[in-house]
Image (cartoon, rainbow, N blue to C red; front, side, top):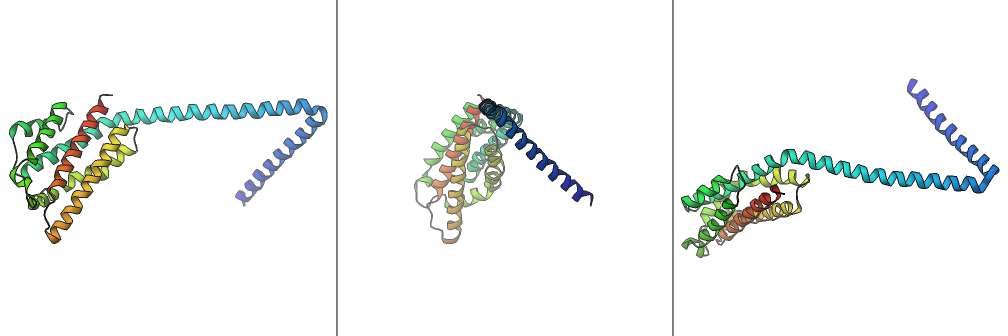
Length: 229
């Protein structure tokens, strides 16, 4: 009952206000049509200009707050992605029996601190891994690729399903977003190749590992560049 009364009162107030505006407008037009029209137009323009300026200021404020909030978690998010990327390289060394200490140590150091020398070590690791004898044959490293995927699946899921969406919702650079998008594609390619290999054993799936590692290196590089800006 009380709600109905309030609704009725609100509707009545709106109708009364509209009636008052119409009456005032009619009186103004009757007394001085030209002057009233000029004042009315000026008022409308003033409201419109104020509305536009308010939107611009509001947009800038929202963007500034968004960047401020992202800055607080960017370091943690980037470090988490770097951790998983470096772990993927470490696991590749284990799965494919290629663990040169000089490269593994440098890559391991890059887990908690984004560093150029870790990026260089990743690039060297990919280059040397691709030149191993088994990597040159069509069926080489097929079983190891399946094993590698199973071991890094959690890292891949964390990057693509947890951290990547967080970056998308942030004020992160376009370069980082694009790098993560390419990494997600390479993860899908590896997953599809492993799926087929488990059922048909066709071989020739090792290149998807090299692609994944290269995209992980690109992501790491993008994180480093953006963290310095």
